[in-house]
Length: 344
Image (cartoon, rainbow, N blue to C red; front, side, top):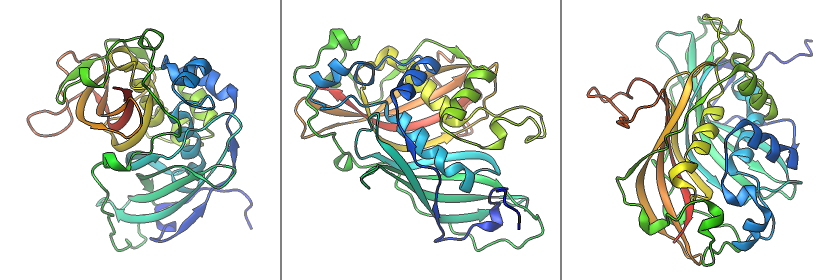
């Protein structure tokens, strides 16, 4: 019996299948430091223990995307080791802040399957849940990924495409215990713009760009223990290029969004997300945002903004999302819809 794991291929999945992922991973201050070294992030809550305390948080959390990447990385050996590409996300909620010392483990359930028309691959839909050392849910999400078939001649399964909500309802957002923005220090945070200063439909060009490098994207992907072959092995793709992990682009765009959204302190949910084009080392990534919705919360001084975060290859000052044909415009790498908590 073979003792090595070649990963699951499309025909190895079935709807209802539950996958318990190895290995639990403890978050450390090193994760915070490395995240800041790889991405140009400056949000005050995860950067400053004193600032976090000043807004009512008993402990100093790491960025929500640290928890997302760690939890996501656990799923890769079982779900997407043989992936062609990760395609999208939906219904992601952050249930509680994650702190150094917390240990995350992840399980997934297969909720859909659809073979592609070429017969060589198919799309696998999973719902994943990450819990901490006390069994409390830290975050959960759905995603879909295109996976190679082991045998193109194997029969296609019955197509099951799950219905996923277009966005997380504002009333379902989980506000961290104790969060209180009534004494919020805009000078320390870096910008004066509060919830009332943003209008639905407003677009914000985040101006700055960062060029992707092989070393940084592979270091980041290793940090999250993501073992997908396409990110490391030049023999995994016909073009011989390493595909940049989509989460790397998400974190880079989120960090770039500080310029114009510095007070969007905490990511509350990811409503939907699509990696609309591949990214490679040498590409220079820019970002812009659109305000999609606004909501009040019961927490003192806390509002929520629903934002579309768009990452592009090269700067697009016109901030064009789609062409006349309805397809994403050339150069768009990421189309991410999320909620963030901001001071009112």
